[in-house]
Image 1: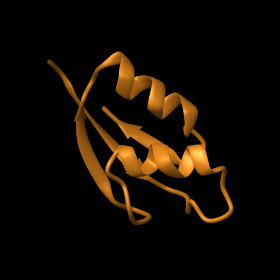
Image 2: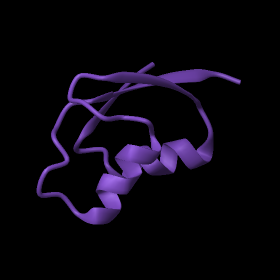
Image 3: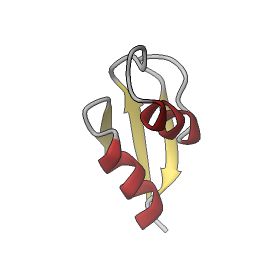
Length: 58
């Protein structure tokens, strides 16, 4: 299956608790950090929830 890279571009400070937990579940901790995940509908849904804080590098 294809892989996608996800980069955290905004801080989670002051954001909703659900959004903070989604960022944590994606494996992101620091601004600028990039993680590589499988391109699944579940991951895409998580990205859609926090799309204003992350950048997808395909």
